[in-house]
Amino acid sequence: MDTNSFSIMPMSQEISLTPGETYAGTITIANPASSTSDLSYTAAISPYGVLGADYSVDLLSESSRTEMINWITLHNAAGTITPNGTAEVRFTIDVPKTATPGGQYAAIKVIKNTADAASGELSINNIYEVASIIYGNVAGEVVHDSTVTSQFIPNFTTTPEFTSTATAENHGTVHEDALVNFTITNAFNGSTIYPHSSSDTGINEVIMPDTTRELSYTFKDMPALGPINITQTIDYGGQAYTQSQTLFICPVWFMVIMATLLLSTAALIVAHIAKSRHRKQTSKL
Image 1: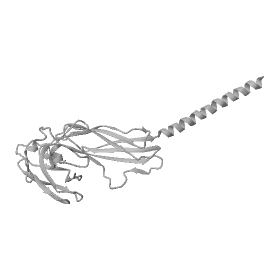
Image 2: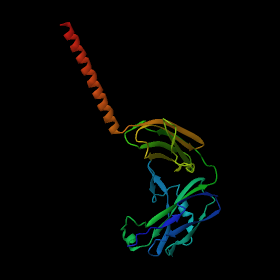
Image 3: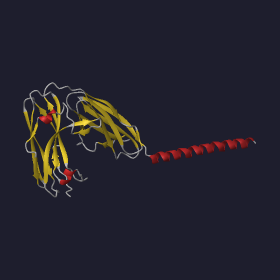
Image 4: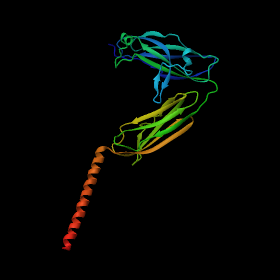
Protein backbone atom coordinates (compact mmCIF):
# COMPACT_ATOMS: atom_id res chain seq x y z
CA MET A 1 0.00 0.00 0.00
CA ASP A 2 1.20 3.51 -0.79
CA THR A 3 1.85 5.20 2.56
CA ASN A 4 2.75 8.64 1.24
CA SER A 5 0.60 11.71 1.66
CA PHE A 6 0.21 14.74 -0.56
CA SER A 7 -0.16 18.45 0.16
CA ILE A 8 -1.78 21.56 -1.25
CA MET A 9 -0.72 25.19 -1.06
CA PRO A 10 -1.96 27.51 0.18
CA MET A 11 -4.00 25.86 2.90
CA SER A 12 -6.08 29.03 3.04
CA GLN A 13 -6.27 32.38 1.28
CA GLU A 14 -8.08 35.66 1.83
CA ILE A 15 -9.58 37.16 -1.31
CA SER A 16 -11.12 40.58 -1.89
CA LEU A 17 -14.08 40.30 -4.25
CA THR A 18 -15.83 43.06 -6.22
CA PRO A 19 -19.44 42.67 -7.38
CA GLY A 20 -19.62 42.27 -11.14
CA GLU A 21 -15.97 41.31 -11.53
CA THR A 22 -14.05 38.03 -11.91
CA TYR A 23 -11.22 36.88 -9.66
CA ALA A 24 -8.66 34.34 -10.95
CA GLY A 25 -6.56 32.21 -8.61
CA THR A 26 -4.72 28.91 -8.23
CA ILE A 27 -3.82 26.25 -5.71
CA THR A 28 -0.80 23.95 -6.01
CA ILE A 29 -0.86 20.20 -5.38
CA ALA A 30 2.42 18.46 -4.53
CA ASN A 31 3.26 14.76 -4.71
CA PRO A 32 6.29 14.33 -2.39
CA ALA A 33 9.65 13.01 -3.55
CA SER A 34 9.24 10.10 -1.13
CA SER A 35 6.10 8.96 -2.90
CA THR A 36 6.18 5.48 -4.38
CA SER A 37 3.57 6.10 -7.06
CA ASP A 38 1.92 8.71 -9.25
CA LEU A 39 -0.79 10.81 -7.64
CA SER A 40 -4.14 10.79 -9.39
CA TYR A 41 -6.38 13.55 -8.04
CA THR A 42 -9.74 15.22 -8.48
CA ALA A 43 -10.65 18.69 -7.18
CA ALA A 44 -14.13 19.81 -6.16
CA ILE A 45 -15.86 22.78 -4.55
CA SER A 46 -17.61 22.61 -1.17
CA PRO A 47 -19.06 25.14 1.26
CA TYR A 48 -16.94 26.05 4.27
CA GLY A 49 -18.24 26.82 7.72
CA VAL A 50 -17.76 25.98 11.39
CA LEU A 51 -19.91 24.34 14.04
CA GLY A 52 -19.99 25.31 17.71
CA ALA A 53 -17.56 27.32 19.79
CA ASP A 54 -14.84 24.71 19.22
CA TYR A 55 -15.01 25.43 15.47
CA SER A 56 -15.48 21.96 14.09
CA VAL A 57 -15.08 22.19 10.30
CA ASP A 58 -18.30 21.96 8.29
CA LEU A 59 -17.86 21.21 4.57
CA LEU A 60 -21.49 20.28 3.96
CA SER A 61 -23.89 22.95 5.17
CA GLU A 62 -24.90 25.74 2.80
CA SER A 63 -26.00 29.20 3.91
CA SER A 64 -26.03 32.83 2.83
CA ARG A 65 -22.30 32.84 3.73
CA THR A 66 -21.47 30.03 1.29
CA GLU A 67 -23.12 31.35 -1.89
CA MET A 68 -19.61 31.63 -3.34
CA ILE A 69 -19.67 27.91 -4.16
CA ASN A 70 -21.99 28.85 -7.04
CA TRP A 71 -19.58 31.50 -8.30
CA ILE A 72 -16.44 29.31 -8.52
CA THR A 73 -15.38 27.44 -11.63
CA LEU A 74 -12.51 24.93 -11.65
CA HIS A 75 -10.67 24.82 -14.97
CA ASN A 76 -8.48 21.74 -14.57
CA ALA A 77 -10.08 19.74 -11.80
CA ALA A 78 -8.32 16.42 -12.39
CA GLY A 79 -4.87 15.13 -13.26
CA THR A 80 -1.91 12.93 -12.38
CA ILE A 81 1.34 14.01 -10.71
CA THR A 82 4.57 12.01 -10.69
CA PRO A 83 6.65 11.70 -7.48
CA ASN A 84 8.33 15.02 -6.57
CA GLY A 85 6.01 16.80 -9.00
CA THR A 86 3.42 19.54 -8.66
CA ALA A 87 0.32 20.69 -10.50
CA GLU A 88 -1.78 23.83 -10.40
CA VAL A 89 -5.55 23.87 -10.19
CA ARG A 90 -6.85 27.13 -11.64
CA PHE A 91 -10.14 28.62 -10.55
CA THR A 92 -12.18 31.73 -11.24
CA ILE A 93 -14.79 33.44 -9.09
CA ASP A 94 -17.48 35.28 -11.04
CA VAL A 95 -18.98 37.65 -8.47
CA PRO A 96 -22.59 38.64 -9.24
CA LYS A 97 -23.37 42.35 -9.42
CA THR A 98 -26.01 41.75 -6.74
CA ALA A 99 -23.63 39.96 -4.33
CA THR A 100 -24.21 40.96 -0.70
CA PRO A 101 -21.20 42.72 0.88
CA GLY A 102 -19.32 40.76 3.52
CA GLY A 103 -17.91 37.30 4.05
CA GLN A 104 -18.26 34.43 1.59
CA TYR A 105 -16.64 31.07 2.30
CA ALA A 106 -15.80 27.96 0.30
CA ALA A 107 -13.19 25.22 0.10
CA ILE A 108 -11.44 23.58 -2.82
CA LYS A 109 -11.17 19.92 -1.90
CA VAL A 110 -8.51 17.75 -3.52
CA ILE A 111 -9.25 14.03 -3.41
CA LYS A 112 -6.66 11.34 -3.98
CA ASN A 113 -8.06 8.75 -6.39
CA THR A 114 -7.22 5.33 -4.97
CA ALA A 115 -9.04 2.06 -4.54
CA ASP A 116 -8.77 2.43 -0.77
CA ALA A 117 -10.14 5.98 -0.86
CA ALA A 118 -13.06 4.89 -3.03
CA SER A 119 -13.94 2.13 -0.56
CA GLY A 120 -13.55 4.43 2.43
CA GLU A 121 -10.67 2.42 3.92
CA LEU A 122 -8.37 5.07 5.39
CA SER A 123 -4.81 4.36 6.46
CA ILE A 124 -3.32 6.28 9.38
CA ASN A 125 -0.40 7.29 7.15
CA ASN A 126 -2.41 8.16 4.07
CA ILE A 127 -4.14 11.45 3.31
CA TYR A 128 -6.88 10.99 0.76
CA GLU A 129 -8.55 14.40 0.99
CA VAL A 130 -7.30 17.89 1.85
CA ALA A 131 -8.90 21.29 1.40
CA SER A 132 -7.79 24.84 0.68
CA ILE A 133 -10.11 27.33 2.39
CA ILE A 134 -11.17 30.50 0.60
CA TYR A 135 -12.06 33.43 2.83
CA GLY A 136 -13.84 35.86 0.52
CA ASN A 137 -14.76 39.45 1.35
CA VAL A 138 -17.25 41.07 -1.01
CA ALA A 139 -16.68 44.83 -1.17
CA GLY A 140 -19.39 47.16 0.04
CA GLU A 141 -20.92 48.25 3.33
CA VAL A 142 -19.40 45.69 5.69
CA VAL A 143 -20.21 45.64 9.42
CA HIS A 144 -17.33 45.12 11.90
CA ASP A 145 -18.51 44.14 15.38
CA SER A 146 -16.07 41.98 17.32
CA THR A 147 -14.98 41.63 20.94
CA VAL A 148 -13.12 39.37 23.37
CA THR A 149 -15.55 38.57 26.18
CA SER A 150 -13.30 36.56 28.51
CA GLN A 151 -9.74 35.46 29.18
CA PHE A 152 -8.51 32.96 31.76
CA ILE A 153 -5.05 31.98 32.95
CA PRO A 154 -4.77 29.60 35.96
CA ASN A 155 -2.84 30.64 39.08
CA PHE A 156 -1.88 27.15 40.28
CA THR A 157 -0.89 23.84 38.72
CA THR A 158 0.78 20.63 39.88
CA THR A 159 2.41 19.88 36.50
CA PRO A 160 4.90 21.86 34.35
CA GLU A 161 2.18 22.87 31.89
CA PHE A 162 -0.89 25.07 31.78
CA THR A 163 -3.81 25.92 29.51
CA SER A 164 -4.97 29.45 28.78
CA THR A 165 -8.42 30.13 27.35
CA ALA A 166 -10.31 33.05 25.84
CA THR A 167 -13.65 33.69 24.16
CA ALA A 168 -13.94 35.82 21.00
CA GLU A 169 -17.23 36.91 19.46
CA ASN A 170 -17.94 38.25 15.98
CA HIS A 171 -21.33 39.85 15.33
CA GLY A 172 -20.21 41.50 12.11
CA THR A 173 -20.75 40.51 8.50
CA VAL A 174 -17.18 39.43 7.67
CA HIS A 175 -14.48 37.30 9.28
CA GLU A 176 -11.94 38.97 11.55
CA ASP A 177 -8.34 38.10 12.45
CA ALA A 178 -7.41 37.74 16.12
CA LEU A 179 -3.66 37.84 16.82
CA VAL A 180 -2.79 36.11 20.09
CA ASN A 181 0.59 36.70 21.78
CA PHE A 182 2.05 35.27 24.96
CA THR A 183 4.93 36.39 27.17
CA ILE A 184 6.07 34.00 29.90
CA THR A 185 8.90 34.89 32.28
CA ASN A 186 10.48 33.47 35.42
CA ALA A 187 9.04 35.41 38.36
CA PHE A 188 12.33 35.22 40.31
CA ASN A 189 14.90 36.42 37.78
CA GLY A 190 12.77 37.79 34.92
CA SER A 191 14.32 35.46 32.33
CA THR A 192 12.19 34.77 29.23
CA ILE A 193 10.61 31.33 28.95
CA TYR A 194 8.39 32.15 25.96
CA PRO A 195 8.56 33.22 23.15
CA HIS A 196 11.59 31.14 22.27
CA SER A 197 12.82 33.58 19.61
CA SER A 198 12.10 36.97 18.09
CA SER A 199 10.68 35.25 15.01
CA ASP A 200 7.58 34.27 16.97
CA THR A 201 4.94 36.72 15.74
CA GLY A 202 1.97 35.21 17.57
CA ILE A 203 -0.93 32.92 16.73
CA ASN A 204 -3.42 34.14 14.12
CA GLU A 205 -6.99 32.94 14.53
CA VAL A 206 -9.85 33.58 12.11
CA ILE A 207 -13.18 34.40 13.75
CA MET A 208 -16.10 33.80 11.38
CA PRO A 209 -19.10 36.17 11.26
CA ASP A 210 -22.03 35.47 13.61
CA THR A 211 -20.00 33.03 15.70
CA THR A 212 -18.38 32.67 19.11
CA ARG A 213 -15.00 30.94 19.22
CA GLU A 214 -13.35 29.40 22.26
CA LEU A 215 -9.57 29.80 22.04
CA SER A 216 -7.43 27.38 24.02
CA TYR A 217 -3.63 27.12 24.20
CA THR A 218 -1.59 24.61 26.18
CA PHE A 219 2.03 25.32 27.10
CA LYS A 220 4.25 22.45 28.19
CA ASP A 221 7.83 22.14 29.45
CA MET A 222 7.44 24.95 31.97
CA PRO A 223 9.75 25.07 35.04
CA ALA A 224 9.19 22.12 37.38
CA LEU A 225 8.71 24.33 40.44
CA GLY A 226 8.11 27.95 41.29
CA PRO A 227 6.19 31.00 40.06
CA ILE A 228 6.07 32.23 36.46
CA ASN A 229 4.50 35.40 35.07
CA ILE A 230 2.16 34.98 32.09
CA THR A 231 0.70 37.72 29.88
CA GLN A 232 -1.77 36.97 27.09
CA THR A 233 -2.58 39.74 24.61
CA ILE A 234 -5.24 39.42 21.92
CA ASP A 235 -5.31 42.07 19.16
CA TYR A 236 -8.81 41.84 17.80
CA GLY A 237 -11.15 44.29 16.15
CA GLY A 238 -8.75 47.18 16.57
CA GLN A 239 -8.40 46.63 20.33
CA ALA A 240 -5.81 44.95 22.53
CA TYR A 241 -7.17 42.68 25.27
CA THR A 242 -4.57 41.81 27.91
CA GLN A 243 -4.67 39.33 30.79
CA SER A 244 -1.74 38.86 33.21
CA GLN A 245 -1.39 36.22 35.89
CA THR A 246 1.29 34.76 38.16
CA LEU A 247 1.11 30.98 38.01
CA PHE A 248 2.65 28.92 40.82
CA ILE A 249 3.86 25.48 39.76
CA CYS A 250 3.88 23.10 42.70
CA PRO A 251 4.31 19.40 41.89
CA VAL A 252 2.73 16.74 44.09
CA TRP A 253 6.10 15.46 45.31
CA PHE A 254 6.96 18.93 46.60
CA MET A 255 3.64 19.19 48.43
CA VAL A 256 4.27 15.75 49.99
CA ILE A 257 7.72 16.85 51.18
CA MET A 258 6.34 20.12 52.56
CA ALA A 259 3.47 18.31 54.29
CA THR A 260 5.91 15.82 55.79
CA LEU A 261 8.14 18.64 57.04
CA LEU A 262 5.18 20.50 58.49
CA LEU A 263 3.88 17.40 60.22
CA SER A 264 7.36 16.60 61.54
CA THR A 265 7.78 20.16 62.77
CA ALA A 266 4.36 20.11 64.40
CA ALA A 267 5.17 16.80 66.08
CA LEU A 268 8.45 18.22 67.41
CA ILE A 269 6.66 21.30 68.73
CA VAL A 270 4.00 19.18 70.44
CA ALA A 271 6.68 16.93 71.93
CA HIS A 272 8.63 19.96 73.11
CA ILE A 273 5.54 21.47 74.75
CA ALA A 274 4.67 18.17 76.42
CA LYS A 275 8.25 17.82 77.66
CA SER A 276 8.23 21.37 79.04
CA ARG A 277 4.97 20.77 80.87
CA HIS A 278 6.34 17.55 82.29
CA ARG A 279 9.44 19.37 83.59
CA LYS A 280 7.30 22.08 85.20
CA GLN A 281 5.11 19.50 86.87
CA THR A 282 8.18 17.59 88.09
CA SER A 283 9.79 20.74 89.48
CA LYS A 284 6.68 21.50 91.56
CA LEU A 285 6.87 18.19 93.32
